[in-house]
Image (cartoon, rainbow, N blue to C red; front, side, top):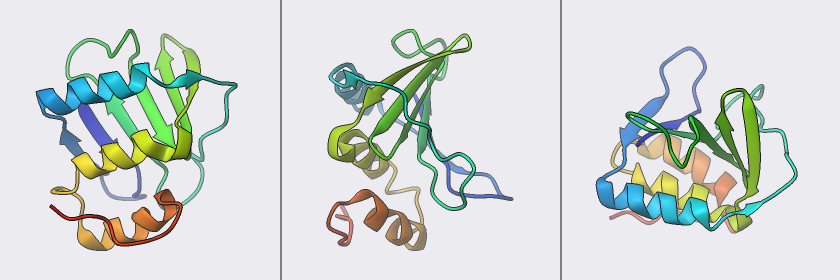
Length: 125
């Protein structure tokens, strides 16, 4: 699975691949989300706009793309969308942590307070 951090206008967004173990964990976390009424994701705003997950080949649980932002998860396939709730942004925070080796510290320091309920420095490993 490939993750894209949607944060840039005018330059390519950062991307990284999940390891097989991370991909399995992502699927487990995704399957445990509750369905919800749709909420619009802020695609028109500047700055951090969330994370996108796509399969390297095929689909993810029948979906072409999964978008994660601000407690909202939108799973898309063939022109239709299904909405889920990411309580306390747990999936979003976990997914961002999988890319810490690829995300520049300055960018991470701008994004992390938005994701965390209580802004603090992200754990470094």
